Amino acid sequence: MDPITASSINNIYNLIALVVIVAAYLTIFFIQKKSNKTQNQTIISKFNESNERIVRKLDELRIERNTIDLQSSMDIIQITFTKSMLKIMEGIRIILEENNIYNEERKEIIYGKVKSVVNTQYDDDIIVLSRIYHKNIKLSHYIVDLDRFEMITTIFGKINKIKESGLQGDVMDYIRSKYIHSIQSAQLRLSK
Image 1 (cartoon, rainbow, N blue to C red):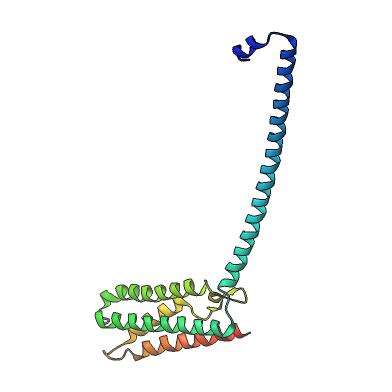
Image 2: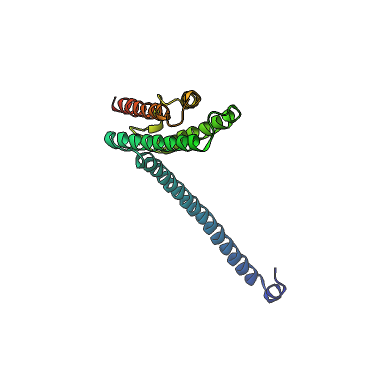
């Protein structure tokens, strides 16, 4: 207790009045503290409920945001595969023009370049198509007829069979037919 306050208490009545005032102050303090705690818990509870509703809504929107109809899904698959087909054909054309495909020492380098071109486009297709949904199924799920390892091996084998320059048509025809078949197959699976 403060010495100045204690010195001003000169009789029992003043002491009783001081004790009553302190008791009332402490009672009000504890009641307010309990009320504040209850209010804080209520605010926290409401905040958590609000956060949960927001998270649920964001999940719903995330799922619905990239969901598209059947025709749009078919168009996206066709555009994505056609772009990849053209890029692979261009990459193979560059490989054929810039490398001596008849030199046995260059075969390993040519194989690596073919592998790089095909893998890059295949991975790009997966990335793009895995972000878009049709009936809550990723469009990348429909890429089943396009085996990148088979494609790499077949393209490299066809390059090895080229005997004269200017006979790259067989390689390009293979790439074109492989992608056309894959587009049709993916669209057929989508429509089921």
